[in-house]
Image 1 (cartoon, one colour):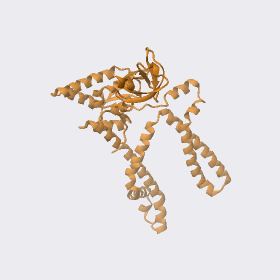
Image 2 (spheres, rainbow, N blue to C red):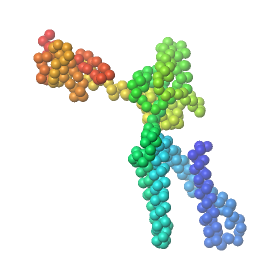
Image 3 (cartoon, rainbow, N blue to C red):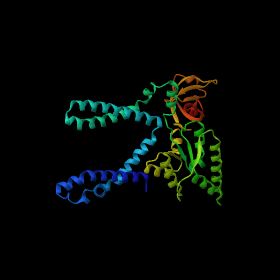
Image 4 (spheres, helix red, strand yellow):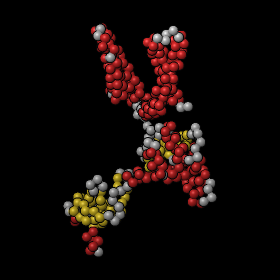
Length: 357
């Protein structure tokens, strides 16, 4: 049985037994059955309370277990530093509520003593928890500088990434890792490695080449100076996609893939899938060879006779034989693109010049 479900069942038993021991003797006395010792026995009362409580509220065990699991996932997404300061805020809220309750007790009003402290405790605990969670950076200022710096560095918890077979064979994820666009540990499921080995040993030459390419790319990932490790599932799965979903939930990780179908399955299960094809689509050039542009040429280029203009996003457009057209809007046709680490350069040709030719 699920440990969370066992915990909920144990809570049910404790609450049921407590209510049985408190309420059943009162009911027995009111009904005039106090002469029967078995009905006033605490063990019997507790057992009856457990049975009645399960009969009435047993239908909610599944929902409560799910709520606890969601709470666990929410907490596990937070860093240890965030949880620490949230707990400190919660304790501060509790201490303030205790002091207020003590003051109300001195006043002596029975209504204030019984109900107001409960409401104040709930409110202050909530605000104390939120204060500790969201104001941790300001709270760090009260700590010594070396401790504050260390805790600030660990306050952000990077989400691990599981790489599937298709993304490894594709290979572009390696360039993404080299450029530093990925954070968090890279997790390689053993099932993915096994699948690559099966593909590499296939009789079909196309599949065999893909598998060998995938194993080569896997070795390149391990050669990178990046935290990478192999993870082993606790249970065997015949379907690799099911394995990836289970591991993503277990490790609270994102899945990197190029498989469109896996992308949709992850969406159904509430798991973030980072599709390399989507990334490639997002960063592709917004102009292509053969496109027509109309831009203002603003200055001379480095080479003789060149004119230079800029697109709306700041991309430089270089036009040959356009020195005389500087200061004018010119119709152009893109002939090539050059991508560098400093940006993209578009080379274009004057359409009027093309027409004249």
